[in-house]
Length: 332
Figure 1: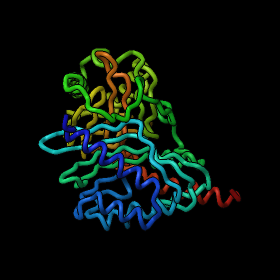
Figure 2 (figure 1 turned 45 degrees about the horizontal axis):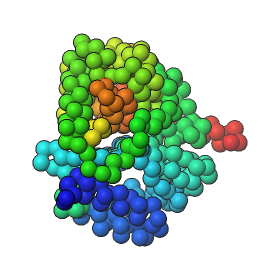
Figure 3 (figure 1 turned 90 degrees about the vertical axis):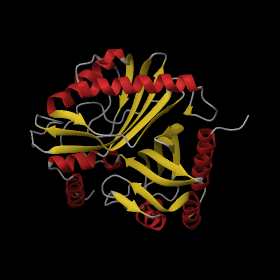
């Protein structure tokens, strides 16, 4: 039986990333060019934002990252492929890891093994990546080097759940009925979130895990999610919670969505410890879900939190540089 397009695309990206893991700086650039459209549109977090073209992407993002982490490797927890609005997609959630040997984005090198949480959603055409949405948890990288935000996140930081059943790296054809069941459940849950009056127990297992970046933190049960995350958003952000998805699909028991922005809401209440700014916050978000049976069990959430704090009026990079200066004065 012929392979589906999703299967072919997953295998293509898996081979691409495996080649990158074993490449030096020069061959890595060649590998990226072979797999990327010349005019690739890359949408990333602060401080990168939008990058146009493979050459600019290599120069601005990949080369500084590889200089900072010469032994950089990628480990995906979830990898799935699908189709949305006549476009083929491959998406992954996981971690880069490597020895932090050189400063990166103004973050001081530690010389230690460092984990960099990532989410990536790629559009493919003709066997090449033509568009990418990419998020990194840079605050977590700062915190691994000793930086603290100076205020308490509402939930637990640093929690890294695994998939509940087997592997999240899909490497075989998935049942279309299973994929449809997952997508319908996710879309019903998203509609319930926007309405704000639907009990989340309709969609989530009581033992669910909501895994979010530093600055918000993660929840280890539905009750904890309600208390420490959902209620924080409901009381701190008003409006219709509008937004749009650039990609949303399911494969097997996993699903993914991303939007730029996927949530637009007004900061008119106390949110993450900050008093109302009155600002309209536009969220760059990426969600990966795992369904177990008839409920959602895991949600890996990627958010450009540095961008969100900037919209509230807090510059994380400035806070971090003050931390570096204080540390240097103390002889650290």
